[in-house]
Image (cartoon, rainbow, N blue to C red; front, side, top):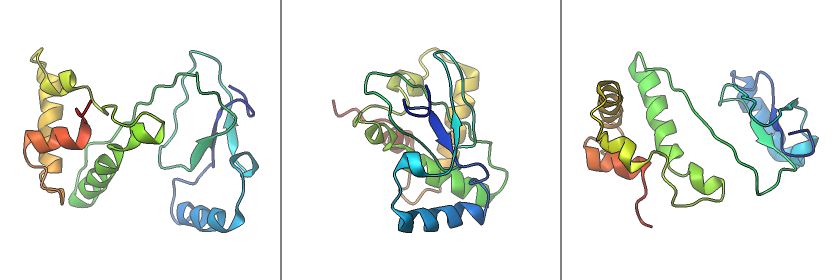
Length: 156
């Protein structure tokens, strides 16, 4: 991936406040194309891994529809209610992520992963923590079915 063929572009430092909000306000009024926004281009070759703070303003430009990409988002285990609220907001927003990439209806998490049929103790702890965090979500996601509804769309 190169600057004109879909490489990731990141605005350095845009994950920090107040710069994050300043970038958002200024970009809205500038009406720039993605390739015109001053950003660092993360050129990469097939098989490379690009890691960055997802809160950074980021985009790509000039890519093709046939390429493959895998995204893994890491959330630190929240240590207080403010952090937990931020994770809940992000999780609720995440349900629509596949649709943003032209794949509406795709699951964020596979139903088989959520079912934990293998009985993985580590996965079970993650699922229980997800349930705990989502129990305070405004949607009332305190039970497993609602948790699955937030992360998995089985309407195929």
